[in-house]
Structure formats: C-alpha cells, structure tokens
Length: 314
Ligand SMILES: [Zn+2]
Figure 1 (cartoon, rainbow, N blue to C red):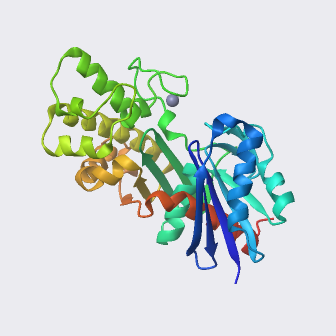
Figure 2: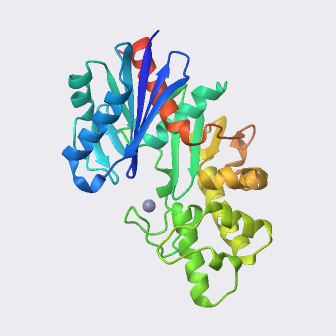
Figure 3: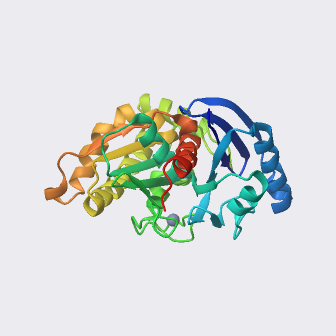
C-alpha cells in the first residue's frame, strides 16, 4: 500500500503526518521550529520530522509553506521561517528520492477541505478568519495560485481607516476582519475609557482568546458586539467583491473566528455579502463551514502529494 507524507512548516512548530492511500493519518510527529536558530538548523529539524515518519513505501510528499511558493517547488517568500529564496523541494527530493510538492498553507487548507468533503462545486473560494484573513481559490476543480501567491484576500484594500496592516499598507480588509485588527480596535476603545468585560481578558502585547470574545458577545457586551459587527462588515464587502469578480458556487468559511461564530453570523454575513455583489450575480452561491480544523492544511498537502504521483500533470 502506498503512503504519503504531509508536512506543515510553521513559525512555531513543524508538524509531519504519514497518510495511507485512503487519506487516513497513520502517525504524526511534531517539534518546535526554533526559527531563530537560522536556516540550516531549521532544515535539520525538518529532516528529523520526516525521518521519523519516512518508510520505504512512501510515494511522495506535500509541504505547507507559510508564504509564496513558485511552481510547487521553490520558496520565494516565507513568513517567520528562514526558508526564503530556497529550492526546498530539490533538497528534499535529493535526500528522500521521492517527488516533493510545496504549496501555500492557506491555499492548501482550502484544497484539503474541498477534496475531503467531496463537494460537487468546482468554483470555490475558501476564507479563513483568524489572526489575519486568508483565503484560497479553486477554479474548474483545480487549485489556483496565479504566479504563486493568489488569494491574499485579507489584503484587498477595504477602508481608509489609518490602520497599518502587517503587509505594510493602510486599511486592508484584515485590519478590521481579523483578530489583530479586532485587538487594535479593542485597545483603542479601552484608551477612550469605554467599559467592557473584554478588558478582563486581554493583557498588553498578547492576543485574546476567541472564546472570550464569543462569551462576551453572547452576553451582549456592547464592545464585543461592535467588534463583530465591524468584522462582519469588512468580510461582507470582501466576499461581495470576490463574488462579483469570480462568481463562485461555494464559499468555504473557516479559521478560529468562524469556528466560534459561524452558526451565529453566517446568515447575516451571507445577506450582507449579497448586498455587496452585483445583483445579477447574487443568486445561488452557498456557504459551508470548514470541517477539518487544524488538519485542513496537511490534508491538502496529502492530496497534493498523492495527485502528483497518481495523476501527473505534464
Ligand atoms: Zn495588508
């Protein structure tokens, strides 16, 4: 029986999983990335994770990169991991003698959700609302990455709000939709002297827990209400723009914020998204919630690896 390895290289941890032919995870191995130690040390750590899982019947590997990947092989940009401008797939192929495919972590998470659930829709947009706002595109049943970094939906210009985004621009959608943007707003309101139960849950320089925001929101805390209203508005405009531009059949929504709030806000978000869509294009688009949680990315990497050897695209 053929096996496949999927590896998620993140800024804090490297997680490897061994899959069987049917997509079942047989074993996992997780270690700290230790990104501050530099490229060579992190590379050795990555080899260690793969060595732990590698068996003679492994046919190929898929690797998730938190950044921009060219041609499924080359790491052009990498956030929080010192792998920039590096032909990582060649290094791994030379060492393990099996095909190695790389992909952007968020795009592959969308792909994993789509393949795993077996949706019939072929034109799909995935949207992850967590610390930031990320996404992935599937067109005609294929992952679409453009020149390597398509679907950076959190950085679509949203509003002249004077908030600096992590990407270096002002007013991107994620400055209001994602948790970094939410925290910025909560801290600003705190300085203005408004009262909120949220202030008990935040400590300076630290990200809040989504569950705390959800509890405050459920209890009707006015600031929590405002934070979510603001996020839904930014998401509605972003999704409406994507709906008009790309006319998908399905939106897959995930990420920590959606995991907590999906059932409560999906109808409102859907209606508001349609009000920001060209009217002629507003019918029939469906929303679904992600179902794989933290395993979405490695599941996408598993499919990428498997398809590379089962259905080679020449
Ligand atoms: Zn940005």
